[in-house]
Amino acid sequence: MKILVVIPARYGSSRFEGKVLAKETGKYLVQHTFEQALCAEHVDAAMIATDDERVMAACSEFGAPCVMTSIEHQSGTDRIAEAVADAEVDIVVNLQADEPEIDPAYIDRVAKLLVDNPDAQMATLLAPIESTDDAANSNIVKCVTDKNGRAIYFSRLPIPYNRDAAGVGQAGDYKRHLGIYAYRKDFLMTYTTLDPSFLEQAEKLEQLRVIENGYTILTAMVEAAWDGVDTEEQYQAFVERITKD
Image (cartoon, rainbow, N blue to C red; front, side):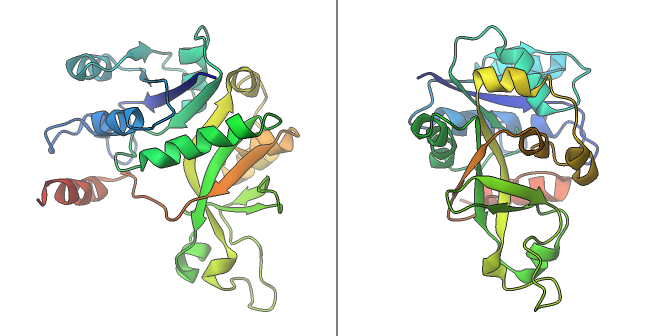
């Protein structure tokens, strides 16, 4: 079973323009992420999908396969689907370009969910919520699952709602959604043809389109969330961690 990691890498970013090509560590941000993907034990290959010649040129510098895709895509999922349309691959892992410190074992973990569960079309990872403030934070997406790890719902609100605690219970009651996905290729191609759903548009969470259309998202818990890079301040913190030695 062939597993391919695809890293969607837009140059434009509302909070940090050109962040994928930030290079204060001596490597591009997207290069760090690409190299982490290559460290995953069960991944057969990794590639980058972009909409900008500057990213394409940078990828050629460090030897990463890169595919130019349409500038019209509304999501990284759509970009990935175009990139792999003609690829001979069974499982596609969607890894965000701004995740330079992801544990490669987590990449293996999300892919293995589909390897081990042939009835699941899609998989993702969850981590413990560290505080009640995080549970209440609408920028941190929460997930509830059934006893077998199948996602029931994702929300920006604290779910489950704890009535006895006036909304937010103990931090340990909540699961944090992490922004990595694995898809079976045939499902990925189907997924991108589905119309945006009501729940997806209400919560601004694309994965709800899958649940609303009756498909399965399988989840697994990992030990902890990792730090992504959304802002210049987060990038500077990353640079400090990488270069402190």
